[in-house]
Length: 258
Ligand SMILES: Nc1ncnc2c1ncn2[C@@H]1O[C@H](COP(=O)(O)OP(=O)(O)OP(=O)(O)O)[C@@H](O)[C@H]1O
Ligand SMILES: [Mg+2]
Image 1 (cartoon, helix red, strand yellow):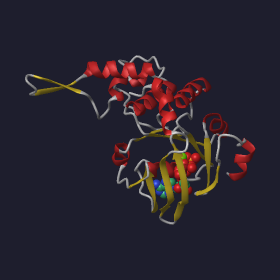
Image 2 (cartoon, rainbow, N blue to C red):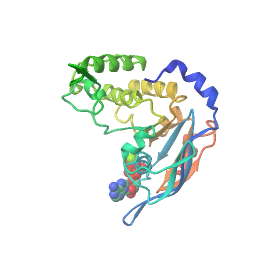
Image 3 (cartoon, rainbow, N blue to C red):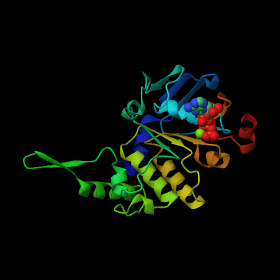
Image 4 (spheres, rainbow, N blue to C red):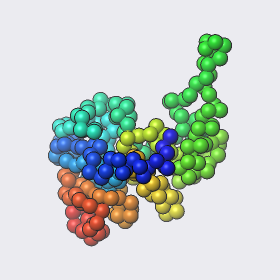
């Protein structure tokens, strides 16, 4: 479980300059379409890095490479300075990379608690360890506590089908954070959310960035400016611009590179 209280001390220890993830010369072709061309950037500990660009610029393709859905046609990914090759999403998850995207999967007819532990249900053994049951009590208690820690008061026994879009997104984000990821990839996670829900999620992202740096994909520049510490701008598969600090990026300036 992410402990928000420990966030400050972690960032003091690692400092701003530490690189947690690096993409070197990443390119991706789909047959004759060159979706990405020689992308180089670094994600530092403690930061929210915005990845912006027009529709079709290559943002989701880059995210899918970092989460092991696509293999790059060329180029490398480094985590904590070590080269990593992801054959599939499980490899990326094993490296501590979690992802939230608009279509993140929740099962309608299962409860919030069941969705929270989907595919990794805790179990309990009976009769000298011979019989194994899913530990529903633990699922309810842990999901409830984790959601409360992140500021979401939701009924974990309720079926997912009864939750609003914003509440579902809160569940998806909380579920991704439960495994204490090293890096969180967010591909347009706030699309279709109300301003109020979006602000709540942004507040959460800002609180946890020191223990879990993020790459936040959006084509909404106001969101990017509001949330992100730095930005990289993709245009037609190329890295058109990268801001060096939080200071000095205006909407007009970003638009020039898109
Ligand atoms: N699986 C695929 N097969 C073929 N082409 C693809 C595939 N995935 C993406 N592309 C192409 O790669 C390019 C970049 O697409 P991508 O989805 O990465 O853009 P994006 O920046 O995420 O756009 P949006 O803002 O609309 O989500 C597009 O030309 C797209 O058609
Ligand atoms: Mg996309």
